[in-house]
Amino acid sequence: MKNADTAPPAAGAVQPVRWDLEGVVAGLRQVRVQWRASQHRNVEPGGREFPSRDALIAISGALRGALFPLRLGPSHVRQEGEDHYVGYTLDSTLNALLEQVRLELRYTARHDGLTATQVEERAVQIVRDFAESLPGLRALLDTDVVAAFRGDPAARSVDEVLLCYPGILAMINHRIAHKLYLLELPLLARIVAEIAHSETGIDIHPGATIGPSFFIDHGTGVVIGETAVIGARVRLYQAVTLGAKSFPDDGSGGLKKGLPRHPLVEDDVVIYAGATILGRVTIGRGSTIGGNIWLTRSVPPGSNVTQASSQHEVLKPEPGQ
Image (tube, rainbow, N blue to C red; front, side, top):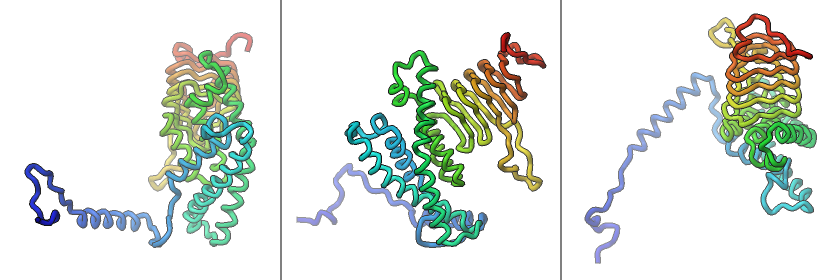
């Protein structure tokens, strides 16, 4: 009997394809080396250099569960076991977050001149501060959930809002990401924000400052820039953009970073679907911005901006405002 390994292939059998993997691997290595040299990267074998998107997906999901255990936690959690679940989840999740914080701080340490001991002390303090902020973050998110319930006649309960509305999911991640941003972890914050962007189609930069009772109805296509400041009880509809009008040059061909360049939206403003507001302009308190408006100038409090009114130079407040 012939050995199966040396027997000729059966008629019609598909033969394995041989790839030139050595050549491809070598080519990819060469491109990586060229990239690292162009970016002046140190070659430090052993250990991971950057935070992990996969790890942060797991961390942000676990934090959602810890914040809302009976709705966004696992199905086995019951009210009498909430504290146990939250404590257990936070213990493992905060340690996982600590490792990602270490990675970002080590990445920036080469520029900041921090020692390994300073990085570790700073990482622990950041995660401790983040953990202590969670009760306040939950309370803030509760105002967003209530705003969505009150602002949408189709919502049957606050539970439906929390379980189903993409705007709420985006805001949970934004509130988490914004805290990380304030703790000077811009890379971790951006990754957490982009996880929600991928899931919901809502793009909120973690640097954006958003007040309580914020509601994004429908949500897909909403863009909120880094330096936007949004007051209390603001409502946006789908495809709204709060963006930058221009990007000043730094004199060497690059763009100046960190300049205030996005809108200021005061309290009790409603912005309808498709509106685009660009630049460091102010939308006055209590104003309504109609759908598909293109706006690059400030409007006073109580304004009602429609496509017709936007053609005029002066936008007057609504009667009684």
